[in-house]
Image 1 (cartoon, helix red, strand yellow):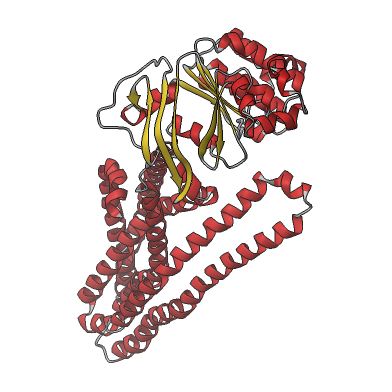
Image 2: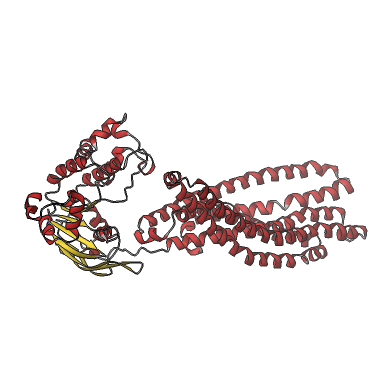
Length: 580
């Protein structure tokens, strides 16, 4: 744990060392005032040396002021270090998340990721900004206080120290007990976060089905569990902290009883008793703080462990050590006996086909037949389990991932629009595009007209995930985003499913000249979207069951023929040529 943490902290090792030296200085200075106060008792009140009172009081005031200034200085130093550290830590974790593949996000809850980037990161900040110097300060204060008490009266020091082993044993037991409790708290916090995140993201579905009470109950259940985990931790504090407090307070009682007897017997002066009493807080406070510091340390361990688990999560889709450079591809795509399983469930089986640059391939089939998965394999969002996928005769596993995806633009089935302007969403894949180019892409996608109808036009801010736009409007903005990238391979995954037939016709008409020199994959359920494709692949249960052009597939009277008949109505087979 500390190795990863130290990789961040070592950049500030000189500042940390300076801070610890200042902490040492403050700890030493804390011992001055109690000693002077005892001296005032013996020399001024008992011996009557009034002349030393002003100098001694001046020292007390000066030491107090200087100590406060130095302490404030190193506290601010630690706070700045902690903020810089978690800034870099959060940035590295976020960059690591960007390198993760679909597999990671398929199996990791969004709420869990958010909990680690907020609550767990803050626990690391608290440890850096407060716990480190407090552990050092309390250890030094306790050690120096013991030395000073021995210096004043060794017998009294031995009596007081007889209690500390009991406190050490209790603190050790608390350490071992409280750590699993904090792991449980952090895990439950992640689950609670996930429930909230899903509820907010799916608020329209919740309201559409009037499931508010169900969601409240689900949240309450997780919230109750979170409360119980925290109460479990509190019960550990209930068991150990009162014991630590009791034995820490016993030091004062022992001092009053034993010290009073020693003063009466002349074995200890009143001034020495006052000095030792002044140092009692230096023994008491660290012992009282031990429980809380252990608490914070264990919280840090729980949080840093979860962060490391996140950082150690290696993506399954990796770049080759020596990728074949392919800045611009022509668009020749080949599948050779490709099979893919998702979580041991077969999705695609022995898929083989070729697509030449400028050709359009349509993929049709029932829901769950593997259409979108096939497209995801081209982008290398997943790796096939067997077979090969080649682009321009190069295995995509031998290509640089970024270069591969730079040559592909996809308008996916699951449309995601950012909380940004319409112009910002369209130019997402090509941020250097001019406004004229953005408008051109919107016109090809038949989005320009409705965008211009908004009061702020292309500067209209889209709500989160495109809230405020219709399904067809979101699809057309997503299509414009893909077109503006000007890729060699264009993927349209059910892109026009939410638009009317007339709009779909206009989109395909304007797309045709754009796609003439590009390899285009179209996934659609409407025959009208795919009938002009150079090659139509019919998938069913992960296999290609039919392939050919629109006319060829109608002649086969298979799945494609049935879909066409259902959508277009019955017709005379002898008139197939006319229908086509």
